[in-house]
Image 1 (cartoon, rainbow, N blue to C red):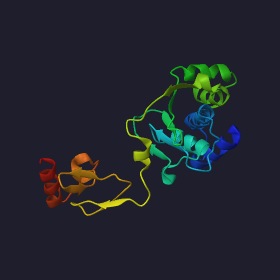
Image 2 (cartoon, one colour):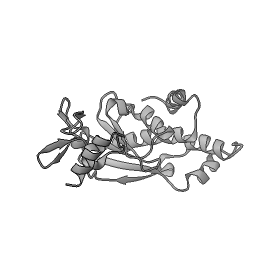
Image 3 (tube, one colour):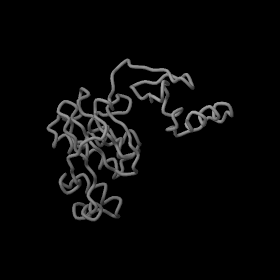
Image 4 (cartoon, rainbow, N blue to C red):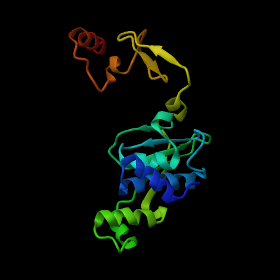
Amino acid sequence: MFSLEHLLEQSSQLHRHLCPRQVLGVRMGLYAGEILNLELPQSDKRLYTIMETDGCAADGVSTATNCWIGRRTMRVEDYGKAAATFVDTKTDEAIRLVPRSDVRCLARDYAPEAKNKWEAQLIGYQKMPGEMLFSVHHVQLRTPIESIISRAGVKAICDICGEEIMNEREVKRDDMTLCRSCAGEGYYLIVAENFLLAQTSLIAR
């Protein structure tokens, strides 16, 4: 296991500076490993992380755990919260960690030398015990972790747009196989009249 100082240095290299949320992310990942009794950063893919925001905290968690979007050991469910759920894929144990509501105030007690609130958080978050930094809840995922991870090599083709769909993310609608966008769950609309009409007609069925 790497030291906190080493992990913070690695995280800071991603941003060219170190900020309090990176510290929170690194501490969150390490504390999750402690609770789940996992050695981190992991060398395999046993731990899976669901982040509730992107940005600095997510990079801190990734650095501490070696869970990354590109390794398919992390996903972002954007709730705008510096929280994360950590899943031991071997045991299915899942815990959700979120910073306690009073951590900003408590940080000052651990960094009396700080010149301002930002510096107090930067220093204090490194020194505070994990149980003072985070609230921990055991949780159950609404979607089984096996479905989230899916199976390697499984692919489908959308019957409307013709695009390839990986990781069993297709949607079945009557006798059609659709991507989430063509099924009306997309985050975008293609600005092409005929395509929009096809989508609108299918969704209305």
